[in-house]
Amino acid sequence: MRIFIIKANHAHTKADFSLKDLPGTSGRIDLLCRSINSAFLLSHGFRKNVRVWLNLNGPPNPPKTIRFEGSEIRPKTINPDERSIAKLIIKALKAGERIKDPSKEHQVLPGIHISNLTFEDIIRKTLKTAKLYYLHEEGKPIAEVNFKGNIAFILGDHVGLSDEDEAFLENIAEKISIGRKSYLTSHVIAYVNIFLDNLGI
Ligand SMILES: C[S@@+](CC[C@H](N)C(=O)[O-])C[C@H]1O[C@@H](n2cnc3c(N)ncnc32)[C@H](O)[C@@H]1O
Image (cartoon, rainbow, N blue to C red; front, side, top):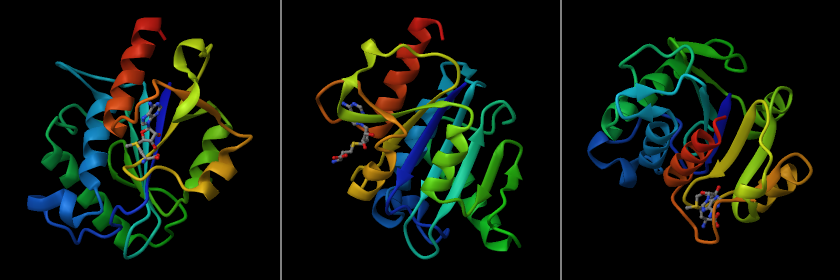
C-alpha cells in the first residue's frame, strides 16, 4: 500500500470558503484537491492501493483530518477537477462539525473519513504498519531507496513543514528527495506514484 500524508498549515477547517476562489479564500485547499487527483487518478483508472491523509490546520477549528481510503472509495466519487474534489472536502468538513466524538473517525462517504486527529496522531498510527519517508528537496535520492511493504510519504504544503514537525520526524522518517528543485506537492505525489509503478511495487 502507498500512503500520502499531507500537512496543510493554513487549510480552513470549516467550509467557509468560496469554490469560485479556492486559492484566495480556503488557505490553499486547491493544492489539496490537486494532490488527491495525483494520488488516486489514472487515465481511465483509479488507484485502490492508495491512502491519503489530509491534515488541515487553518482557522477556525484546527486540526481536522480527512482520510481517503482507495480500497473503499466508490467509483466516480473522485473526479479529476478541483471543484468536485473541493466539494468532497466541504462535505467532510460539514460532517466534522456534527460529530459527537471527534477523536474518533467518522465516515462521510464510503472511504472518506473525518476526525480531529493531529499530524502527530497520524504519524504514530501510520508507523505501526508502514515505513515512513519524509519528502524533502535535501533528502537522499529516491532512486537509492529500497522500498518494501507498506510505504508512507509525508509532504508539506506551499510553506512546507515547520522546524517542530521536522524535529518530531527526525528519528521516525527517512528524508528522501526526487530532485534538488522545489516542486509542487501534487507534482511530487504524481512523480512518486509513477516512480513506484515503474519499480513494479
Ligand atoms: C512547494 S514544496 C514546499 C516548499 C517550501 N518552501 C519548503 O521549504 O518546504 C511542497 C512539498 O513538496 C515536497 N517537495 C517539493 N520538492 C521536493 C523535492 N525536490 N523532493 C522531495 N520532496 C519535495 C516537500 O514535502 C514540500 O514540503
